Image 1 (cartoon, rainbow, N blue to C red):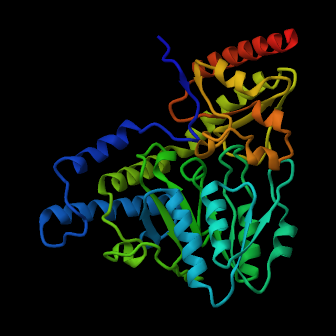
Image 2 (cartoon, rainbow, N blue to C red; image 1 turned 120 degrees about the vertical axis):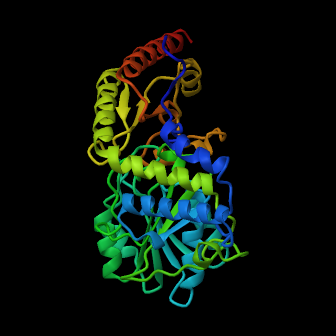
Image 3 (cartoon, helix red, strand yellow; image 1 turned 135 degrees about the horizontal axis):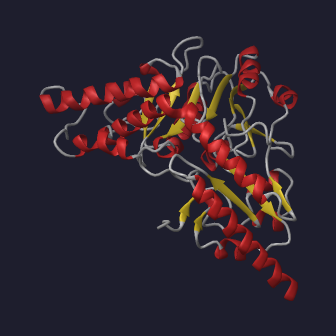
Length: 387
């Protein structure tokens, strides 16, 4: 029997892969030591597990293990990167460039920094959700210390031209940071090839546990320095104090290892299902795809339905778990600021569904989803015609 509701909100969080849970279990039970306990076998076992996880994470993004800082997730990683760079490079300047469709973890942090002296430029995007590279370069000043551009958008899946952005940053000797939470583990992300200086990501977006993530910080060419934002113990080479979440870190490492092995074939399978979903739903009158069709993550589809009441649409979809925007803002009854930045009206932004497919999504679920969405929209349009 089909399990309902069908889970299609993998952008908000992914289910824990059973293989990840299996790897974590020993460190939740018998191997419970503190990785900072250097005087007995319990601590040594924990430290060894953390070291192995660091290597697994580094292998996924092609960096040195010592360039990985473990955090509680991408939000903390974004905060540590932005605030840490702002503090460390204050002598050089106070100007940060970012994009108005970034995740709130970046936007809210930038707004905080503005209150303490930062000057932030928020670049717009075009109707496809892409930035203008000429506009980016024109925004750079002698006081610019950091460019922060999301790798793949959490609502539309749009992938920004990361190599071109990093080339501009290198040309002007400005650090380049990216929030790659939706991209790492879904598409190949190579910090060396892409010349990324700082990068944030989370375990729970790639079938790992919640509450753990990482920040990549380049150590050579250029050597990036950040000021720690938490004091107390000097963990993570003095950059992020706090007792390490060993089971979570083990889970992140295993999740990264699985992505290394399966990401390419998994992405192709998921993309095929997403393309089927879109080919069917975009036949509905008044439907439109949001974001660049050819520059996006394989698991994301963001579709608006004209002449449909947004709240009624979501309430009617009882058999599928989808969202109309980012999970971090889902409690706020406002149209998506990301879709508004693409030029959508409030009404159309409200009547939008974000489909996030994942590792455990099946073709059968896609067929059911298509039928269910069609039925609900048809019912909504009939009700609207009667009003």
